[in-house]
Amino acid sequence: MPTKEPGSWIPWILVVIMGAMLYQQQPKPEPTPVTPTVKQIVRKMMTDTQAGYAKQFEQAAADVGNGSIKNEEQLHKQLKEGLENVRSQASSDLNGVMDSSIPTEWSDGAAVSSFLRSVSDGFR
Image (cartoon, rainbow, N blue to C red; front, side, top):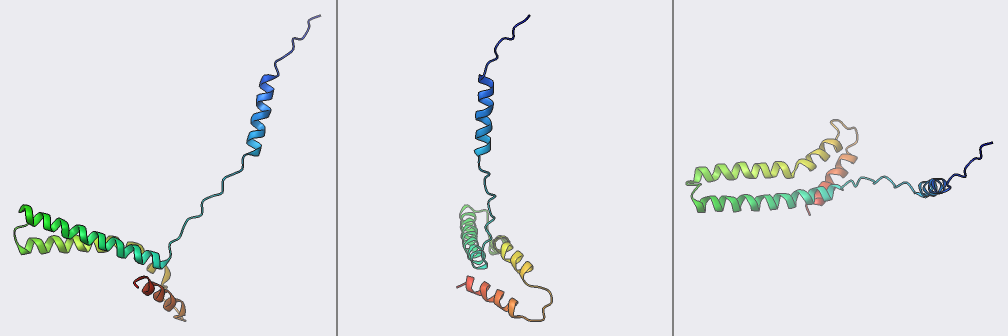
């Protein structure tokens, strides 16, 4: 009669240890998205505008200094386009918040008035 050879317990011990480790592992909580306040959006817009304006004027000064801008018309065109792009990019977040927060029609303007005051507070 054939005899059964004893098997190794090592694989089973490893399976039990790994199972216990997986069982004890806590699921990580989903990160909650941080929604900036209107005041923070306005402050960011002002900071971005200020930095962008400084960069545009510095670039214009360099272009005048190296001779790539030769007259007032070229300077005006470069500054007008550059500053317009800065304003547009800097205010995109505020425009989005205004589009989503101000309804096209309202019966009571209290909520809209409150929102507009919070925007105003961001500029102070």
